[in-house]
Image (tube, rainbow over all chains, first blue to last red; front, side, top):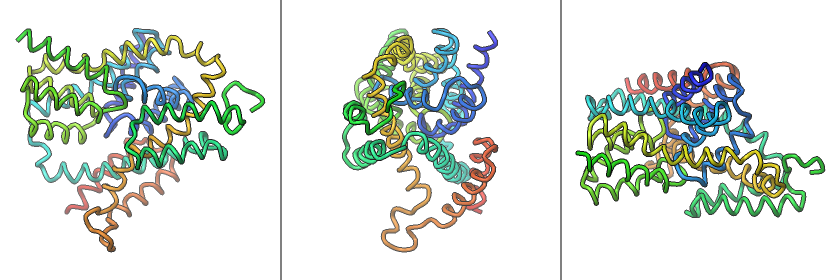
Length: 186
Length: 186
């Protein structure tokens, strides 16, 4: 019971303080899920993101379901997911009911501009943290650089890019260009 | 009314099942709903997108709640929110159940070794637009006005503080940034 409540409360918090969507949630996940609760490691979260990228649904929701499932089975997955969407449900219902024109308030627009800068700050820190772990040699850098160029400039769908990265991963692993989990000789 | 509820459940379950990647992927489905059912017009849709982007929570969820509320009140909002996450819960629970076994297979780990550096690239690509729009004046062309100096200063100061005091909760950075945004406009 206790774990279920913790799952709900933690993911509620995550939904409440995330502006933007799945990836913008990363700094909060690092703090609350990885450091505070130890429900997952950074590597596992990256796995969930990778899977979330090419499976149906919204990445933030998929990540919540993953973490919840591993803590408390099917029910845990459902509770964490309901938690992450609860703030949206409450806030949007209130806005739709009372404040349809809330973007017309000058102060809201300025606060949002500031908040976006804050999100940039958090993302720089989150990304540099991941960078140190995930880009460790030439092979991993080549995959990173190609994926970045293609996703910024090619217009190819991310699903396709994930497949290309997967195939490159197999080839690079055989050539010993990237580290493979559980492989001592790499 | 019942047929509206059923259509909402069906449409949002479908959206959750087929929008792969994230919140933005749901927009084409919402456009189609506007055309087929006339639940809202395209102007209302753009307003809902703008509000969903600027309120806490995953954007895809915010939009589902918004459309549900606008179409069929608070019960409609509840149905659409639950319907859009249902496919995620089902698919991710199935994947989570077998992931640990999958990860004992060598080629699966090789695939993840390739995808991991690419995920960092996807995260950077996802926040790239936010960075540009938060810190630069895109309309200014090639001149000094291109740099939004006050915003860049806020960004650098907050980044410095966050690097120096990593124990600060990320939410505090968001709050300070929001207040800075309001102060800037005075």
